[in-house]
Image: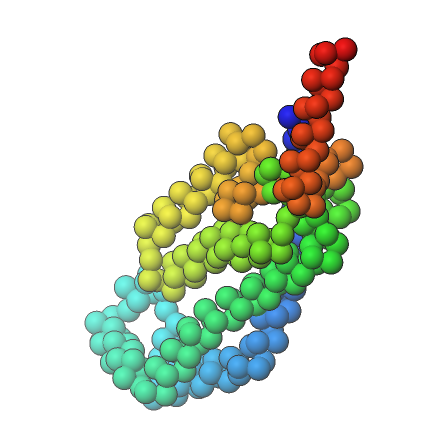
Length: 252
């Protein structure tokens, strides 16, 4: 039986924090590039110009809090409502707003995906043993839970399906929809459930695995002390050898 040489908890946390910082920097850079390529600022300028035009036409500001709106006189409220209706019926403003929403989802999705593919898939393929920059620095690695080296297919599933789709984009979309007013308490509850599942898995599983490890059947180990086999056949051969040695010891 091969013992699992679990990675030190603080090394894992330190590596994760470093990788998260690098991921954030790369994702922001990718988002800025996509914003420029897709002319996000152009649509934002269109919407701002329509706001300004309506405000000038009606002689008031549309940027009011609920408290400020309630403090308006009846005539001022009526004028504000007319101005808001005029803006809502403005096709240019509606188109620009819709494009901004769509591009926001697109930029968030692809900037984070690019960052994950580069830092959590391509870099580990180059380093080997599933190591990111953080894991490389702190001497920890990722292998299949049976002790076999992580394949590129499992690494891709771990990165894209686990880390990107489930652990990142689900809460990111929920937060964005809460911010835009499409979700309320239900969205907060969903994020809370996802976080609770992560904490439960980390606290009560043998290898302190998270959702992405469960989906890909992987575990994080100490590279210096953990034996990692290239193939399952190599693993079986090693176990057979150990078993034979144990029998020989008993018979002698």
